[in-house]
Length: 101
Image 1: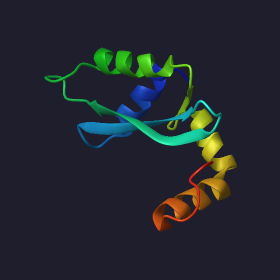
Image 2: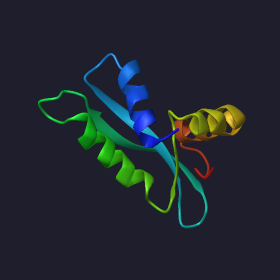
Image 3: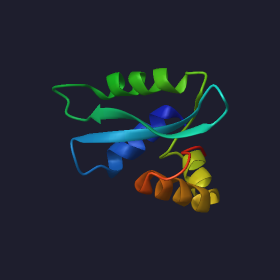
């Protein structure tokens, strides 16, 4: 799924004039980092769709970018790694142990 398709998917599903589109990256040590995000405003007087898409495409071109969480790749990653992601969030919430994935 392209960045443009992810954007319009989120836009179509959003009930609000704004959204936070999350993406996943890999840091310099190869550790997967969850929760990076870009704020998107759908109100035409502030931003147009093409401006939002260009911002997202710039992020997607980064060397460490893996996928948009709302993409099929993201959904498959979270489905495949449900246990590990759940344990990670439990550690974050409880502030116990290292927060590496």
